[in-house]
Length: 575
Image 1 (tube, rainbow, N blue to C red):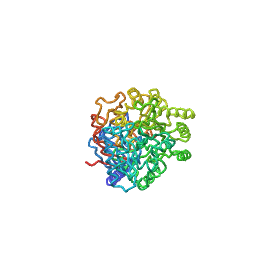
Image 2 (spheres, rainbow, N blue to C red):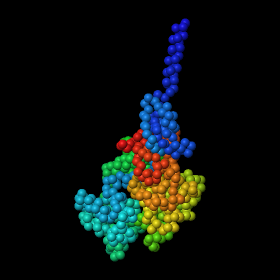
Image 3 (cartoon, rainbow, N blue to C red):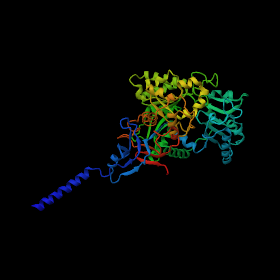
Image 4 (cartoon, helix red, strand yellow):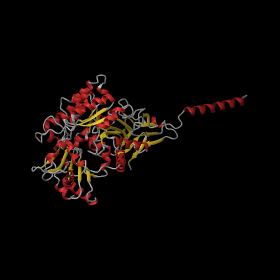
C-alpha cells in the first residue's frame, strides 16, 4: 500500500512539474535591455532602468531587478552599462534620396568660403571627362567666413568657378534647396545670357535669375528659375538611386533614427522602398509625402486612397506642397519687404488656389496635407486655405486630419494661435534656428524676429504639436544639433552666451517629445511607437551620454551607441 502511494505521489509530482513548465514561458522575452537610464516619454512612468522585448514589441518596463526576473533560457541580455535609452528618434522632415546623393556628389555643406568651393570644383574637374556634369549641394553664402568679391545681393558670381571648369557644366544646389549656382558652360547650354534673360522671364515665374549691374547673369538662380539649368542635368540611373538609398539608410542608423518622414517624393521612390522592404534592406520605417509637383500622381492616389502598411514600414498618406522659398536666398514669402532688400517680398512658388484644391481633395480621400511655408505671408495664406477647406467639410474635425505646415519658421503674431485652434501640426527643424538666426535678423529685422521667428513656446501654448527634424540634406541628418538648438537656442558654437530669445526655448522633455511621441502623432502612429510602453514597438535610440541632464554644450559631443528597431540592434558603435 505504501509503495503504491509513493508511486502515486511521484507520478502526481511529475505531472504537476510538467504542468507548471508548460504554463511558464520557456524562453521568456527575446531580449532584455538592463542597467540603463531609460526615458519612456510616458508621464506615468517617466524613467526606468530596463525593458523587455518579445517579437519586436515591448512586453515590460521596470527596474533591472524586475526585468531580469523575466529572463528565459534563450533571452538575450543587453547591458546598457548606464547609457541613456530613449524611444527611437523620428526624423519628421527630410529628403532621403538627397541624403544619399550627397554622398555620391560634391558635398559643399562644410565649405567656409567661395574660394574653397572653387577648389572643390577644380578637384572634381580633374577627375571628370570633358563635358561631364559636375553636381553638388550644400553651399550657403551666409555661412561663409567672408563675403565673396564682387558679390551681387550677397551671392558669389560665376567667374572664378567658370575659370576652373571651362569644359564641364557645373550645377551646385544651395543648402536650402531653394537656389542654385551654375558656371558659364552650364548657362551656355541652357541658353542663359544677358540678351536672353528677358525672354526667359516667363519661364521663371516664382523664381529669379540674379543679374549684375550690367544685366549679365551671375550664375545664381533662385526658386523655380533653377529648373532652367537643372532640367539639363542627366537623369539618375536606378542603379545609382539604389546605391544612394542604401547609403542614406546606413547614415540614419548611425544617427539613431528609427523612423523617417520623407518630404515629397514620387512613385519611383515608393516603388524603390517597396523593393527594399521585400529584399530586407529597408530597415528604417518610412512615412512618405507625395510630391505636389506631380498633379497626375496625386490624382492617381486620390482614387486609390492612402497606403497604410500593417507592418508600419512604408506608409503613404500625405501630400507635400511647396508654397514659398527659403530665407537665405530671400525666397521666403513675406507680408512686409525684406529688411535688407527693399521692395522684395520673396516668392509664392505655388499658386494658392492649388493649396485650396489639394486640401479639399485630400480631405475627401483621407490624405494629410503638409505645406512648406517659411515666410509669414506663406504661413498665413496656407492657414487661410486650410481653414476654408475645413469649412467645406463640416463633418470632419480639423484636429483629426492633422494637416501640417512644414518649417513654420516666421509667423505673424496674429497667426500663431491658429495652429492650436485648427490642430495644425508645426513640423519645425530647430537646427535652422542655430544656422539661420545670426543672419536672419538682417532679412527680417529685430521686431519680426522677436515676435514670430522660431516661436516654439508660443506654438506649444496655443495647443499645437511641434515635431522636430533636420531637413537633411539642408542640414546634416544628425538629430542632436536640433535637440541642442531646441533647448539652448544658440549656434552650434555656443553663441551667443545667453542664447537667442530664450523665452521660446523648449524644455528637454518637450524637445524629446518633439522627436518621439509627438513626431509619431504627426504621422498618425502614436499608438504604435514614440514612447517606451508595453504594447508598443521596440524602437529605441541609445546615447553614450545622458542628453536629459548633461550641460547643454555636451549634447553636441554625444554619440549614438545603439539603434534598435523591432527589438533588433541594427547599429552599434565601435568601442
